[in-house]
Structure formats: C-alpha cells, structure tokens
Image (tube, rainbow, N blue to C red; front, side):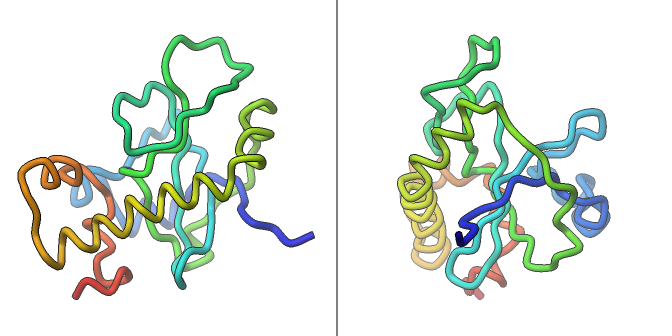
Amino acid sequence: MQTIFTLNKLSMDFYTKYPTTQYAEIEYKPSRPYVVMVVNIDGNKFALPLRTNIRHNYCYKFKNTGRDTQSSTGIDFTKAVIVNEEKYIGAPTTIDNKEYVELMNKFYFVIKKFRNYLNGYVDYRRNGGDEFTARKYQFTTLQYFERELGIY
C-alpha cells in the first residue's frame, strides 16, 4: 500500500535553519513539539501542523476526537512549512485514533482544501489582492518559502 502521508515532528535541524528570531511565524515550543502531517504536493514536501485551539477557518477542523478538549483541533494551513530535505523531518509520531481515522477518510478533501489555500497565496503574492486577502495571508509561514513555491 502506498503511503500518502506520514506523521512526524520537525527535527532540530529544521529549527536551526529556521530560527524563530528570524522566522517569527514558524511554530516552535521546545517543551511541546508539534506533530505535522508530511505530504508531497507539486514537487514540494509540506509539513502541515496539527494544532489545538484553531481560531480561524484556514484549516481542516476535526469533527471527531478522543481528546478531552473544548477547542477546535485540526490541521492549520497557515503554519505549513516546506521540508524538502529529509534532515528536517524528525521522529515519527502518532495522533488520537479518532483523528487518525478521520484524516485517513478525509485525506483528499484536506489536501484539496490546502491546495486552494496554497494556490490563493501564490496568486496573491504574484498579483496582489484586496485588504481581506492581505489579512488572510498576513501570518502565514508560506512567506518563508516563496522560492520553493516559484513565486520569484
């Protein structure tokens, strides 16, 4: 069976290359490493972070979870990073079983939704946009990977 994604943490090599002092929008908490879904899209390897307490709609929010939480858990597209070098991908990890089953069942929907966000960002950076569009992408980590995205 072909692997369509993996669940990992980001490596210390990644955080050394992209320190938060220079890349403020990249999520980093040494005491709580982020779980990311690693997936290949259009020649780039993206790490999409799974987060709790997502307060915007540029994500996929899980409908089912076994975790005791009142907040929205899901995959945050605004904090996606590109990890084309294997050394940036850390240890494999697991997630809540209900979330994993949902992710397996909704994988293609999640990727379609992320592609829409990604393509919207590329279009915005190439062609500009209105104030709403500027706010939508104001805090995205994609800004650090414009070369890989072919924007310039």
